[in-house]
Structure formats: C-alpha cells, structure tokens
Image (cartoon, rainbow, N blue to C red; front, side):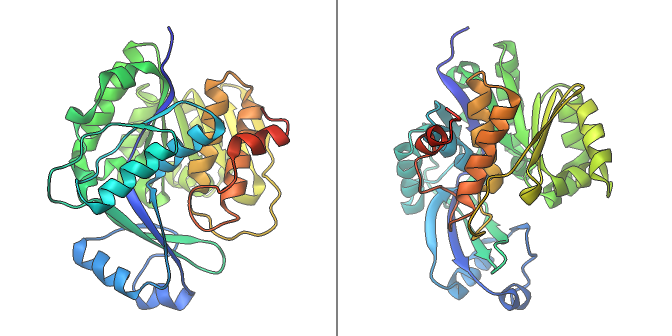
Length: 331
C-alpha cells in the first residue's frame, strides 16, 4: 500500500520559552528538576515574569519529532491543537515552515495556545513548566483519517495521557492505522508521566495498540518499577514488538524479539541543553525505520539528531540534518 507520509506525529502543540537559570532558581520557585511540571494559567504568568532572556519556538515533544523527520528529508504530518491567537499563529507558521503537514483546526477562543517555560541549569538539564491551554481540547474530531491511514508509522507522546480527550483521538488514530496495515509508536515521555499511567501504558503495549516504544533509561526503570536496567530491558523486550531505549552518554539499545542492537552516542564538544534530545533521537530513528534501513543505522541517525540538538539551546537543530547525515555516510 502506498503512503503519503512517513510518520504522523500526535502531540501537545506547545510554544517553548527557554531560558537559563541556576539551581537556586529552581528551589526558590518550587520547580521539580528534570521533570515536566503541569501548571495553571496564573503559575505560567508568574514564572514568565521571573524568567531571564528567553528563546521562543514552536515545540511540544511530538512536534519536535515531526520537524526533525522533515529535517532529515522525511514526509511528516502532525495533529496538535492550538488556539486562534498570536502564539497559535506562530506555532502553525513555524511547524509548516519546517515542512510538516499541519491542518488541525484551531480553537476559536479560550483556552489560549499552550506554552512551556523551560529552565536550563548549568549541567544542561531542563525543567519544564507547562500550561496545556488549548492542548486539552484535542479530541477524536481532530483525527484526519487520510493522514491516519496514509502514514507508515503513527507516533504519539505519552504526555497526551494527561488531557483526557486526547486518549480517544489516539485510540481512533491507532485503530485506523492498524486497519490500514500501518504501525503505531509512542514515547514514554517522562518518568513522572510513567508513574501516573504505568498500567495504561503497559496495556497499550501488551494489547498491541502500540508496536514500537521509545524510552530513556529512567522511564524504563519507572515503567517496571526496578532499579536494574537489564531487568527493565528484558521486560520491555517481551511486552512490545520493538523497543528503543536511550541512555544519554552510554548511547542507546534497540531490542526486537531476541535481537539486541547497541548504538554509540554521537561525540559532542559540549553539553548545552538536553531539551529535545529524545524527540530528535526518535526523529532520526523513525526516518531511518520508514526508509527501510537497518536497526543499527536507525539508531545512528537517532544518535545524530540527539547529539546535535544537545549542543545548543532549544529543541530544533540549527544544522541541516540531512546534510549532516550525508557527511557521516548515514544517508
């Protein structure tokens, strides 16, 4: 069956506002380091007023992945809800300018477009404070069947389990995709997110709703409530058809049945900001996967995307991803 898209991404359409801070700032403002902290409108206004100089960009985990796939030369589409306001217009223009097909109808009024204040400490760790705003309105009526059935792989973020109607949209999209012979993937997103929805995530994997799972080491351990990476890896090997686990400076591991592939990380000059690392890894991997490349080459493309983005502030690599991959013999 021919496909119009390589990957359809579904996520929270969020404008990222990124600023550097010190450890004291996190403590003084009650921010959990390294987590995605959900906040309300007043809290968003307060933190914004206390931020230093910031970089603003259209973001959200799956949005970053969609932009990365397009950057590698893939055909990407995106479902995500914004409002018909200033930030919503910025988001739509920016993601389309990246080459992503984005046609989700915006809200006509309240709540406003989502935004995430991301504070980056000197060690490169990012602490996200997210006001979901219009994101919570994503629902089954936003599913475009031609995109759901026309993409080789659908990819969604675990964060979407927070707004309740998004679950309906994902299940509908997954059903349409599977009936068309397509595959469905997800990222576990955050160890705190895993803590909230462990049983539901495991059911998605074990029921076959999800074929491919992306996780980092802490999310894997949280999913199986274990301190052992090896134990978690053997469990996820049994629970899903294909699992990809990133381990920061230790690289990544891909498991499929009895097969295990270990991938080295990209050597970097300096760790600046980990924002978008997992998103860009998924972008490189899925671009390779939908192009029919080996699991090892998929992992190398993922390592390239992640390695480039962590050497700058913000979730979108400044380099041309396709050119960088060609220079390294990956394309």
